[in-house]
Image 1 (spheres, rainbow, N blue to C red):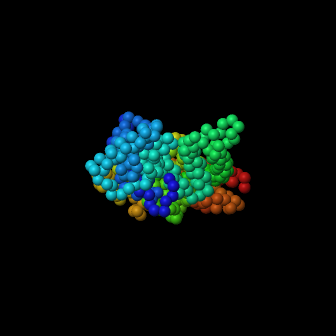
Image 2: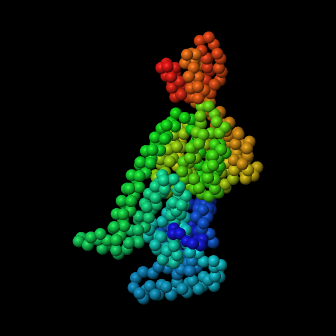
Image 3: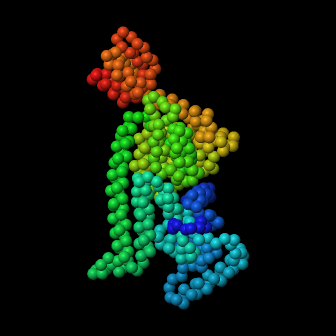
Amino acid sequence: MSERKSKPKAVLVGVQTQETSDADLESSLAELRRLAKTLGVVVIDRLTQRRDRIGANVLGQGKRLELARLTGGTGVNPRGPAAQRQKVIEEAKAAMATLVEELGEPAETANLVIVDAELTPAQIRNLGQAVGVEVTDRTGIIVDIFHRHASTREARLQVEIARLKYLAPRMRAAGGATERQGGKGAGESSLELDRRKVRDRISELNRELASIEGEAKVRRARRQDTLRVALVGYTNAGKSSWMRVLTTSSVLVQNKLFATLDTTVRELHPKSTPQILVSDTVGFIQRLPHDLVASFRSTLEEAKEASLLLHVVDGSDPAWEAQLQVTREVLGEIGALEGRSLLVFNKIDRCSAERRRELSERHPDAIQVSAKYPEDVKRLHRIIVDDFEDVLEDLEIVVPYDKSSLIGEAHKRARIVSESFEEDGVHYRLKITAVEAAKLRRLLDSS
């Protein structure tokens, strides 16, 4: 979607096929409205239609006229000889006049149509010609949000790759007859040249991204022996709010979809021994474009490699069940469902007593919290620390007095359960990870 100085005014369009229930359609359109709002788009109306499938023109003729009434278009994109096209246009004008007489003139005119589906380039072109304004689809809106919110070099590269892959086929559709000019001996057409530039740019971005991902992989490898918690969940579920209060870090918190695109890693606070790291990850959404999932696969490795997943769900959202399912599907796609996880219903301060009972009945093992309540922050902190007790080993060692430098290593690598000073050295009972226990034993043997 192109930039505008004033806020765009949009009409949302939903097509309900046989596979889509009324509830699914309402949930998806509500989410699309939030996506539009995140981009600064003002939604002035919505329009839906039941169809067996989304055809070449997206909507039937009657609904295209209804939509055109809201955008100032004709509602048709006639083909064929001039006389035939003129006849179609005149008939459309008459139908539009009747429609306006029945419904009245719209209070506002839209300059954007957002369709709650992934459209082909031809479908976007056909509907755009009929309504006379810019048409975009759900994927285009999501890609645009990612493009605006990416802040680190890695995120910008990931989003740009996905964006170019989205735009490339739309360039082909717009090429029309110029595409055929590149016949034998004619050299490259401007469209073919643009295509090649896009392919070359994607290859260049992939090389840059591979280099950055290599560095990120090294950083993750360094943290491999550390206990790690990953916050995962639907976009705007409150992951960044929990990241802020669990680590006392200045993580960006906004009431917007996809406010966080970059993985942030901080130490759990108050600190625990052994150290526990917490990472925030990119949020998920219904029908997240596959190119974006693929682009952010390395970022999502934080979730896959974490010792514990905190699956954050906005318990106050009417669509929480669908959002929970979407997150599980994406986590399954990247192979991150195998490890330990804890379901966290967030924003419980916004929930009625009835909703809280419903959540408890559906998921009795989940916890219900709000990042706004200090007692809930302490509670979740305690749950995280206690959860890692299951992966800690009991270790008893004796540090001889002539190896006193290892006393600091014991305090650094493990939690001290007991410490006593005997004739042969300092006797320790420790709680420690298996990896750190092996390191400590090697230090004792080698020193």
